[in-house]
Length: 108
Length: 120
Image 1 (spheres, chains in turn cyan, red):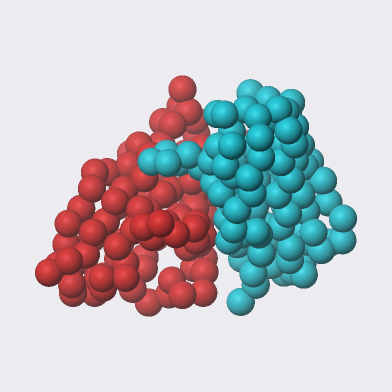
Image 2 (spheres, rainbow over the protein chains, first blue to last red):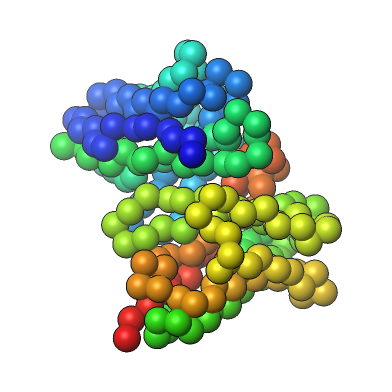
């Protein structure tokens, strides 16, 4: 089955930039989406269609795509950004959706 | 406001069945597909599949065929997930999530999650 691979963890100091990658063979053909999940809460969509930001999501969240890798960038990280982040996309046929393995962002 | 409200936590014995509900409000239920997502304790998100809220046609992800059934009651804007022959490894939080306004491959509205615990 199709897989999206993320680093297990990223650590960053407040005010610095966090970058989270997500790799998958079908990413050149399928859009990627990013979710933030805090402990005990449901996920929240923070990026759609690789780089678009839903209303209400701070500008410090941005997304980009290059080949088989997409990247979520959090600029000027704040303590409240500490959470798990998941990428999500679809297989090459577009039939089945899949989540990435997840990345825990720690704000030092 | 637009929201999905799920049924409460369940404690079941192995071999039993469970039915989780997801009630939509604040939008036209049949205008958006509904997805189901599983999260085992301390683990990541798994997409289980989706159901077309117009036709009732379900699509199941690999690993979620056979014991898992998605259904609807459009008269009360509610989607259901039924799991039969429960196993310990079914212990997880189950979320319903609506296809988004931005793109129907993303999920913009999520239920609060339903914890299903399978234990003897």
